[in-house]
Length: 152
Length: 152
DNA sequence: TCTGATAGTTAGCACTGTCTAACTTTATTC
DNA sequence: GAATAAAGTTAGACAGTGCTAACTATCAGA
Ligand SMILES: [Mn+2]
Ligand SMILES: [Mn+2]
Ligand SMILES: [Mn+2]
Ligand SMILES: [Mn+2]
Image 1: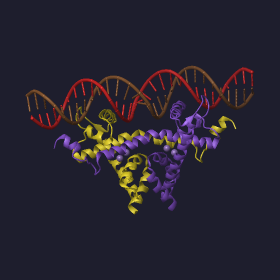
Image 2: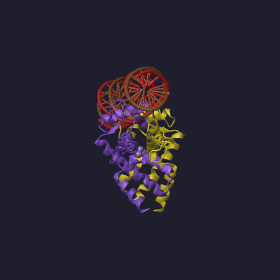
Image 3: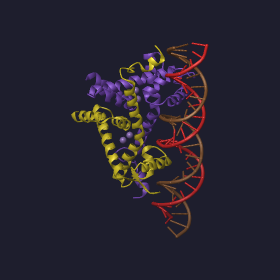
Image 4: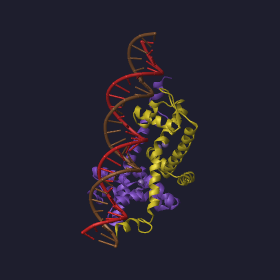
């Protein structure tokens, strides 16, 4: 068997799935990862505005566990992407688009969280895991999670 | 209410949880994210070695859906971290540490995958979501997933 | 209204993870 | 065994995500 055979023998199969389907899955995960930050930021900003009337960088930093300049830079990106609006030395506002994304993220977060709790997980671990998992669940999975949680 | 009050009123509570617990969760997610790449690589390398006798960069690249130089650089990092060993222009081997990590990742991957399937998710979406979720499930959650899948 | 404390920004560093273009090495095939 | 194809590396670009140190702006209280 030549190397080329090894690499591309008719449909390339490793674990029973063609290589490009796997590649697609990995691509999807990379995409999700690139959106994670923005999602956590807008979700948190919406929450701060709701609970305290405004979202200040210092509060964002404290809750995310990062330093102030990290937040400044991230907010610049979010502004560039049209998710927030801001003026120098002032607190942050969500654009319509940002608000929509925040709502969507909050929904995902809560479905995942309720699901984990309904499985019997303790509250702290559930919050922990939900914070990561929320960015990697498809709409289909989410539907199953929601159904399970309301049945349980 | 002054700004300082807003930020640190006795225990800072937003949604019922103190800010540092949340920060810890986000820190955990950032840590997980920084391990994701290494995990996917060693898992895939182990699989290629098992199925084809060797793990060649070109095959890794095809399955991950990235270009060859991306793989070269990633493999350099993995070697630096002691997870793989390699010689220039040759295929890749796992160190003992790499093999151990690969086993652990494969286990997590399979538990998450089986769980999603047992919830009723279709195979392709399950693979997709598992590829992302696997890096963000705690051992506790994993135990609940495994129990649910074997009961179902 | 000063003034000191708090908040925010800027500059600059480090590392990750992706790419393309160009080159080198290895493998296949005639 | 020489020519060609395939695989792999190197160099260099660029964006993201984090940090510290140093500066600037705003706010709160005397
Ligand atoms: Mn999150
Ligand atoms: Mn969240
Ligand atoms: Mn994965
Ligand atoms: Mn995996």
